[in-house]
Amino acid sequence: MRKRIIYWVVWIFVLTGLLLATALFSLYIGSVGMSLNKILRVILEGKGTLEYSILFDIRLPRIILGFAIGGSLSLIGVILQGMFRNPLVEPYTLGISGGAAIGVCLNIVFRLNRALGILSLPVCGFLGALCVVVLVYSLSVKKGVLKIQGLLLTGVMISFISSSLIMLIMAVSRTEDLHGIVFWIMGSLEEPNNALILISLCASIAGLILSYLFCIDLNALALGEEEAMHLGINVERSKRLLFIIASVLTGFSVSVAGIIGFVGLVVPHFVRVVVGRDHRILLVSSFLGGAAFLILCDTLARTIIAPVELPVGVITGLMGGSAFVYVLTRKQMLLKAK
Amino acid sequence: MLRINGLGCGYYDRQVLWDINLEVPPKEIMGIIGPNGSGKTTLLRAVSRLLKPKQGSIHLDGKDIWQMKYRELAKRVAVVSQGLPEETLTVEEFVLLGRIPHFEGLQFLETNHDFEVAEGCMALTDVLRLKDRPIGQISGGERQLALIARALTQEPALLLLDEPTTYLDIAHQVGMLDLIKRLNRKLGLTVLMVLHDLNLASEYCDKVALLSNGKIYKQGRPEEVLNYKVIEDVYKTVVVVQKNPVSKKPYILLVSEEEKRKKK
Image (cartoon, rainbow over all chains, first blue to last red; front, side):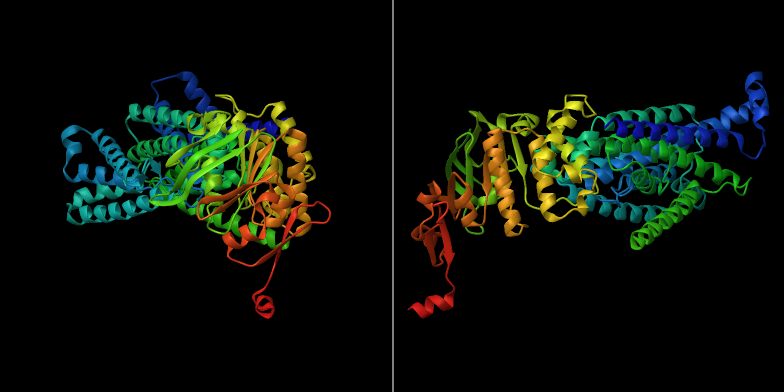
């Protein structure tokens, strides 16, 4: 059975390679064209030049943030899909993003960001997300048992309620604030604050490590909660901790980068087709795959009609969605052919 | 091995079982029989710790099962529940999940020993030849065997089965119960199983417990429990009980309403 482990290691190498290639591509391409030679020279020359600051102050932070956010989103997707045994769940299904959006909208409307500085935006977003997490969680716990289906329904309802509230806020807000709200909701990897990028990076990696401690539990949960209990899994504890990991990570991602759809839904599906359903490999490879996917989409978003920058959510939706439909229909055709 | 004392339990405010006293001695096959809705599956769920008792207690080798750790219990008790797996996992991957209770704290990969145990269990249940097939694509009978292989991979002392013959034709029913009997004799496995079919229960169980309306109506050896009076009283239907000429165990014949009327 060494075969399977070799297979896993090979895939981790392939995905890491893919991720590095995407990151290099993203570093290389942009409105200021730079050949690989030039990049090398710029790096050797060190600080001070304009090219150096383009590379390391503009492009690299975006790549790191793309890595953190893309990895987190698709990791959350795997965790939630595994926990709910439902392939359609994604990081935004539980209404956490809605909470974050309300936090940010209120911040913009009440001009808190002007009074308290730009950093108050992600902080408000995170607080909004936490409120929803606590709300959804406490509504779904009955007699000490976390009801998974209840969690899903409550989450979806809270999403609807929060999107109505956002519309309400937008309807009564000033035109100049409207732009800020829309811009935030569309999601972007542009983040001038390096500390926030670092925090996101640490959060995403911590999320990966913590959730990996539950990979066996997730494998057992795939058989259903009762079967997992028969296999000696403390199902209540696993569900709670996984939910908390997933929701806090969602809160982090959404408050830093806004709502970037589809990464958390599509990437886990693709990765599952390739590496299989074992969470011991699925968690890591989804993280890597999601990171590569988001970096690629962001690179396209900022170069495709440069100097205008498209919202990255447009690219993730278009690319992810169409590729997904293509793979799905092809799979069905293959099944029929068999 | 397993001792149930004054057990009462149920779902929310609906009590299903009342004052169940039952002892399963080691290396015995105990069958739970009774009409639909008499609480057979509920009893099994209580023993497998899915339901918390409202009254009474369940002890495994002198230890209250609710005082045991999850993994500790799973190393001693394995459950084969009703319903077949619909996974895309291969049979081997599925069976290997049975090793989870034996994982150490931070162990993520199976050891060679785990693979050996799983392979042995698959050989014992005759699913080794299917080990690379997706479990959703093999027949119902084979899936049932894979379920048993997974339970055996836990290396339990007590095996709980919920109607292991539900989806099977007569040949497979007999094959399944022969297998359980073999495991009982060979590995010294104690078995507690819910059976619908009274004849199978009579044929294969060392002892049976007959449930009626959430209480144990009668328990003992099949010859003691399965007579026409008891069955007619519990099932409210007319039966004829005779002796199997080969095994000398009781077997139950049914009589249709039309025939009953003709007789009168």
